[in-house]
Length: 270
Ligand SMILES: Cc1cc2nc3c(=O)[nH]c(=O)nc-3n(C[C@H](O)[C@H](O)[C@H](O)COP(=O)(O)O)c2cc1C
Image (cartoon, rainbow, N blue to C red; front, side, top):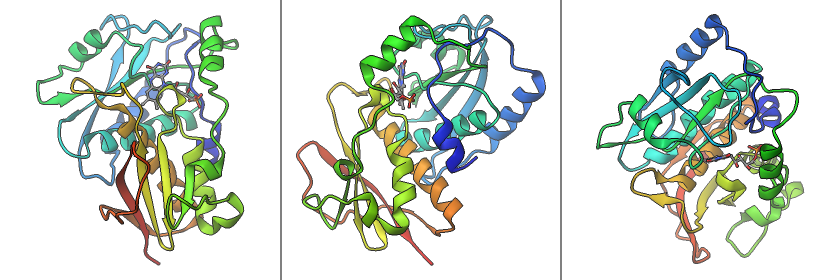
């Protein structure tokens, strides 16, 4: 469940309609109960039955099971949610299962009822769980085309060295190259790729380049969830290449573009 899994993951919205075996669901439940994140905010997961809980999504076909999660409203809730949920997504990908992050196109009321969401909690997203069908629905194909889901912005438009005035090329990124490449391929809401990164020697500073419409009091800031997903991919890759360190709050106070805000940093300790 590392770099290979990150590269293999893609959103799956068209499922073959089969039921995921009990033993597989038990493995996933165990993983969900133990999954952790570096933001110190617990995320509570559940596997839900699509029929029993009357769950649906206008973009999903043939899914019998959903993964959902909720978190208490607080600082770092969205980053924690993104990190932990993506760990689960990578785990189910490693088991050969398909999934897709759903923050907008789901019957939110039905999911929130099934999750027994309390006033102090948010459920930013959920995902179907199942085996991908051989062919994507026409709607899924059209969605992928519309969002250019197979494309990502170039490395040197997302990542910088020293400050935002100096783009970082993949060739010059050294030990950060593969982990940043894994950030680049991460999923994000509407494929907006809001992550920007400034590398300063042993520190890597993450910024959120905000677009309008992704932050609501009912769901939290979905682009901060994207930042949590980026942190998950970044750290998963670093663990595999043997770099040690951790996430901290240490705003370097670099001048950032208007719509970009500092979120967290990773510092190397070896
Ligand atoms: C936080 C988040 C929310 C998303 N919400 C939706 C959604 O509501 N509906 C949907 O069809 N896809 C949703 N997606 C999936 C993205 O559209 C998808 O990740 C992106 O287009 C890139 O495609 P890929 O995942 O196949 O690499 C979401 C992704 C993320 C990370």
